[in-house]
Length: 155
Length: 155
DNA sequence: ACTGAAAATGCCAGACC
DNA sequence: GGTCTGGCATTTTCAGT
Image 1 (cartoon, rainbow over the protein chains, first blue to last red):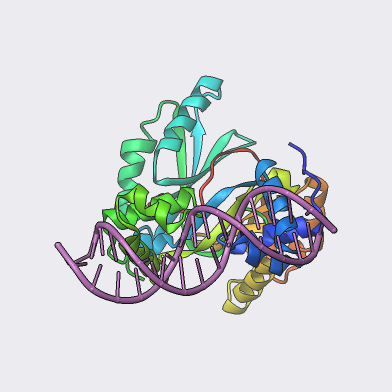
Image 2: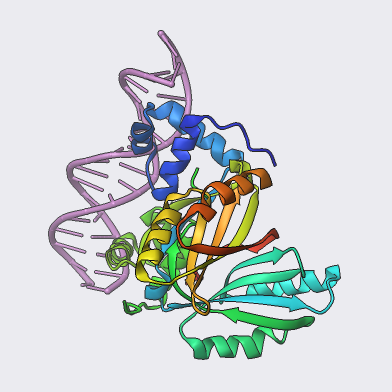
């Protein structure tokens, strides 16, 4: 999992595609100061190397109907592998869970939940999250507002 | 900021574009069971309404050279507007800060930082973050692994 | 509202320098 | 890495259902 040697042009390509993922090779090549062919060659390399995992539309969660986010920190009562695997597969299945990290320390999980309102959150908590086997305790924090939104560090 | 009435087809369009943002209108129309023309119309509506904010390449942070993420929770010593505005504009300028939320409660910020290693993190902490005026205290948590990655809840 | 076809555009791929 | 050209895919529009 190396940082695949990238030169300044590769990084420029990635930057452009991070802010506009539908750029055509032509437009892209102009923006990075290259002609289309070598630009397309680099792009294919970046995709093949897995530096570019894919492309996605960036949606407005509020307009989608999920204006409320909640950060939830979860403790399991035993950290055996089975419990982790089980918890993670459950979590991956819940659409309410947007993001989930396995943390160091007390070996918790940190999740971001997106819901339409607190009633939906309560339902999710009581009927889904707390029902997962091995969940010992849960702590929620509610954000007011997203200050900066990114899915990856800017190249 | 309403949840712009979306029918099942609109949501299907959004779902498809969330997992493949470079789909052409043609391919998209086939997948959602429509012919290209109305599909293109809907797509333009979704973009104009701001439900679709844009398109982005999804990058592999590790392969980009930033395998280490750190969650940082920040407390300011006074929560006057000026301090918030100042902190936020600084934070938006740091490439290391991928994500930032203003939290309720003790009115903290929660940030995700992406760096190449802990040395870079230390440098960022001491020479950037702690130098922002009004920052009272900082707490860091290190994740081991990302379990589920999303930038928005699945439509 | 969706469909289908036709026209115009513009894109990509490949061979080659 | 750059240029060019052939061929194709895409988008758009328009008339029809």
